[in-house]
Length: 439
Image 1 (cartoon, rainbow, N blue to C red):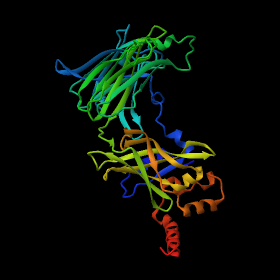
Image 2: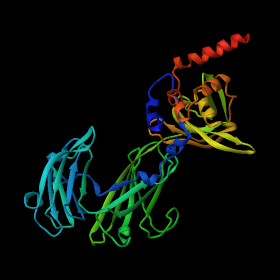
Image 3: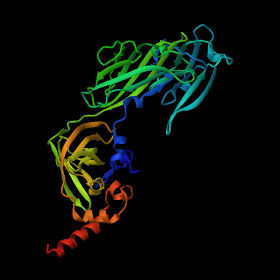
Image 4: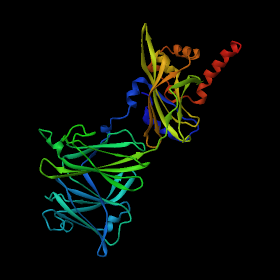
């Protein structure tokens, strides 16, 4: 198995010479864009932003929040730990008792919330013995919060929200599409799919890079991009007009098959980048660089010629079998490149051509040019005609000399590119041959 594209993150390091990665044709399918639904966010909770407002000499926030399922709980957190100075009151829908003061109904503990090195101080409230399905939260503070704060509510309910970005476009001016639906986890037996239609209303809360916010209603009407009406699949879209990070929250509400209120949210962070990349030609040219390495160049235009890109492509060649000729995949290639001279440069090891026994005509296919920060596709090119030089005799002789199977002749140089000193033996061999011929 070769070094697949996940390792190309290392290519973005500041280095005068970019590393050229490659792999066999059998790995090309692993390079394809993932089905957006496979990257879906699965949520069993709802996150609510807390905005303290002045009220008679102090600051206050109130909200009634439905929580279905057993063992309801709420997590209160703020980046600077403000919540530890707040007065929190929680009341069940049918109870006038303050759960904070009732140790039989309520427990509280301080903990760290987050992932990996990013941990925030938080306070968890557990209402395990409560039979309520809706809770009134009241937060009071002597002073306004200097940072954002949030309440995350959840339970042991089997009902989940699934949300995913269904469009690949993430450039300024692109339409961003988001899908959402509800489902039941494996612990909940259901005979029919009616529980998938438990969402009755959903919308997007979008925060633009400049901090402005707007809402977009999600629809399940079978019109536009929503394929089937009332199938439980909700859809919404908006145009990304700014460069930067969009924060998008999917808010869904409805009724569970148990007649309990369903309330879930899912949060997406969507990077939007600017691109003026354009293809300047209709073909790619190959020329020997050194040793086995063939540089593959094709022309691009951009005003930001100091920008670096992650570039991936497939090399295809013609396999001749008598009168039958067909194009077959030969290898994938990838590198970090710039377009400072108006060209993108990839590199192909000629041993991939020898291993597949292909000849002209050649093509570059499924060329994908991405930014090196978020790996957003800036330009996709379906195919380019590729002109390659005749494979040099030195390469043919060394390849035949190996007398091994294809898998055995895959070398580190073919997979990761050639170190400068690795080419010396080939360069010396070529020079000796030239001298012997009087060159």
